[in-house]
Image 1 (cartoon, helix red, strand yellow):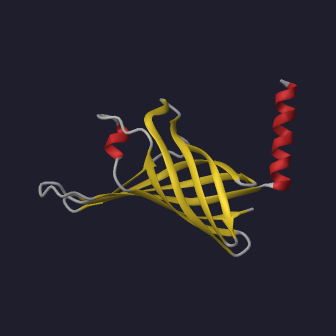
Image 2 (image 1 turned 90 degrees about the vertical axis):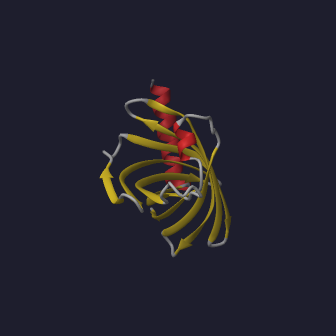
Length: 170
């Protein structure tokens, strides 16, 4: 147990010295386009807090949602709160810098405190970001479902998804 704590502390100190910690607000956007005249177009926006650690070209993080906003032509506007910490999106990936701009890609899964890992919901995010001054950043990413099994939660989400994030690097 002492070795695990020692290794964890060494990694933590190395990230503090050589890496970067960041905190951001993430907006996951799920628009629903349909060609069926009986269905109504809708949009869902999930707001979340993103804590991230980057070390060189590698990065990993945890995101927890706290609010969901929805709008459809039939039902109008609706919103509800999610208890922070009840759902977690955890991811690992890479960042390729090009001056102030950078390309990002990561793979992640959704984890529920009550149910564990949500099956059939592995996501691939590919996008780009830009440093806004010394400490701020903004990112835009497209999201692809890696597992798209029929009759699952992942199948219900299939379509166009993207996220927008703005944050601060400590």
